[in-house]
Length: 394
Image 1 (cartoon, one colour):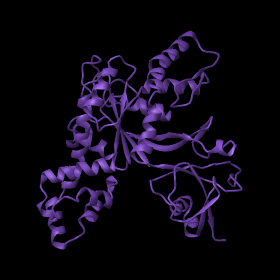
Image 2: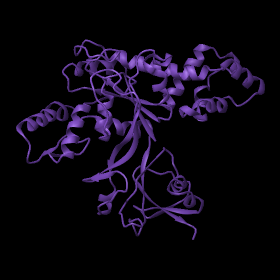
Image 3: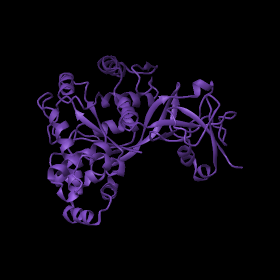
Image 4: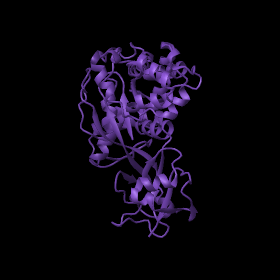
C-alpha cells in the first residue's frame, strides 16, 4: 500500500513527510524544494492486542509504545503541483506520474493562507486556501481525462464493433492508475450502452469518478498553529461539506518527534500530551510548552497521525490482522505477536493465509480466531485487530 502526499509548493508537504517518517528530506520556504519524489515509511497507529493477552509484543516491523502499535505504510512525497500541472506546467506531468501507484492521497493545504498559488510566501491570511482545494481536484481529474482520451476515438470504435466488455477494457487501459473493473462498472452504470456516443462531458464525469474511487483523498489542514488558519478552516468546512479536513500542524509534530528521539520528552504520536524530561534548556521548555498550548490542547493532537490513520482506515477501509497461535503467540525467533498485516476490506481467512505465504494458502485447512478459540472457514471475513491462526496440511 502506498499513500501519496500532494499539494502546491511550500504548503508543508515535506515537513509533514519528515514528521511522519523522520526521513531526511529537504525543507525550505520556496517552491520546488522537492524535485524527485521522496519515499519512506510512515506508520498508522492502532491499539495493540498484546494487552488483551497480557504479554509484551516484539514487532518485527514498526514498533509498539504503551499498548499503541505502529504499523508501517509507504509514503511518497511528490514535488508541488501548480495550476496547469496536467499540461506540464511546473514539471506537472512528471510529478503526477509519480502518483500512479498511490492507493490514497493526502492533500496538504496551507490553511493559514501564507503561500500563493505558486508556493511563494505571502502575508498570512492574504491568500484563500479554498483555491488550493479546487485547483488540485481539477488537476487530478484532468490528468485522468488526458490518459483516458489518448486514442479514444479509435479505442471506442473498436470496442463498439467488437462488442468487447467496456468495463474490462477501460480498466485495463487505466490499470496503471490502480483503476479496477468494478470501479469502472459502477462509474458507467448510467452511461449509454454504445460507447461511441460518449461525449467529452461524459468522459470528464468518468475521469472524475474513477479518480475519486482509485485515489480517494483527505485534506490535511496544515499550519493550524498560525493565527489566520482557524477562520479559514471553519469557512472551508462549510464551503466543501463533502471534503474531510483534519486540523494539522506538521511543524509541531516534527518538533515533538525530534525531541522524543533526543530523549528530551516522552511522546507518542497522535496523543494530546507529552512528558518533559530533565536536561532541557529554558528555551526548549518554552518552545515545547507553546506547542502544548497552541496545538495539542487546542486540537487534541498535531493531526499528523490522525491524517495517516484516516487515510488508511477511513478512506481505504483497511484492517489490521495479527498472525498468532492459540497455544503459542511467538514466532520461530521467539518474538511475541511479531507481525501485523494491513489488509483490504472484506479480506477472508484464505486471503490472509496467502498473504502470509503462498504455500500456506495452498495448504489451508482451517483458521482459528485466537481470541475466542473459534474455528472459522476459509471464507470467514476478517475483522480489524483479529488474531488468526492458520492450520495447514501436514
